[in-house]
Amino acid sequence: MRNSPQYPWNVAPKRCAVCDGRFGLIRHYSWRTALCSKKCVNRFKARQEGDHRWLRGLHSAAWQRAQ
View 1 (tube, rainbow, N blue to C red):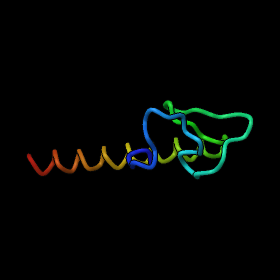
View 2: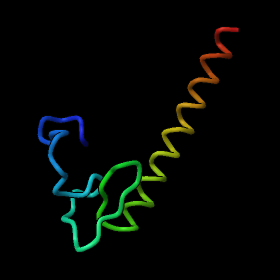
View 3: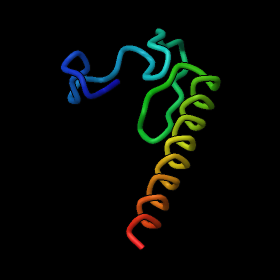
View 4: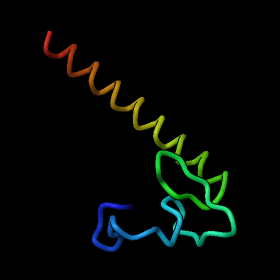
């Protein structure tokens, strides 16, 4: 999403980070990420939690293999 040269860091985002939709009158933020709606906020949080769960599983598998 924000790692490509298409999205420079020093410019305010013009589109939602999750769905690439346009912003309305209200912007929602989660972890300093501009999102267009509560629906996208929920998607963003679910995605983050899934990533954390996956990384915890990977870490525990690597730790067990080292034992």
